[in-house]
Length: 55
Image (cartoon, rainbow, N blue to C red; front, side, top):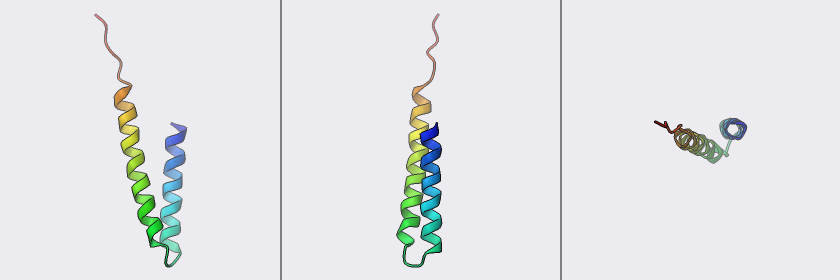
């Protein structure tokens, strides 16, 4: 979970730098892609952690 939060912070920082600094708009797009990939990765990890019920 710490890795997820770290990557989200990095994605937000890249997005902010891309918006603020003129000419670095590509950083905004990289930040958005990293943000989306991080949520896909989190969803895949949470889906794999389902408990198997025993009868």
